[in-house]
Image (cartoon, rainbow, N blue to C red):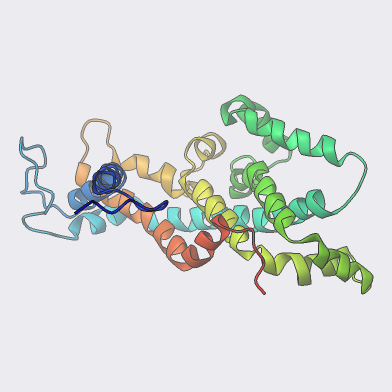
Length: 283
């Protein structure tokens, strides 16, 4: 008997094995450090974490490390500060990137191409290049050592503007033209025609903006001098003592900082994956 010929989209067994092997390697590289930190945060003081044959599963799991984090630093105050900064950044990107993206995609005005080119040019510059000018600007506005000063530079991200522009460009222009014929102005076309079709991409912008604001360490460290105003990522440095450090506490603090990101992604994941594949309009 002859072997059946493989179809156009069929995959051989060897290729399947190779694909799953590569996926397993990627899974270990991405999920492995997180699982190790979680395991370390649950290990008791009597358990050796420096043994030659480390164990992923704690022998005597405990939550005492999380309580010690709260006793060592005002973790909840730092978390509230981070939430305030993240809320300002998310609101700024959700509103500002949407309006700017719609203007660049659907409105015709003088200098639109130049403005788009400037947006693209800012993506080439690394953040460290402009950090000095950002600090001088924030200090000149009187927002040094404030949470508003921490959130202000990230309130509108140029990448988020381009993402929203791409999403608005994917909306069929016939819908916008029909709304124009019916007498709808630019604001009405944005709210009732364009925005409902880019909710997926908007959720992508929200997730990226929240993660960027929540995880930022360098900029809050530069702007803030009052320890009471520290964000969570900056405040966690106090868990690493000058003469001694407990990796269990550091791992527990990392898990506390990681939890809000998991919650945000879990709530918006349905829209996130829709936004990644966005391009079609629902009928």
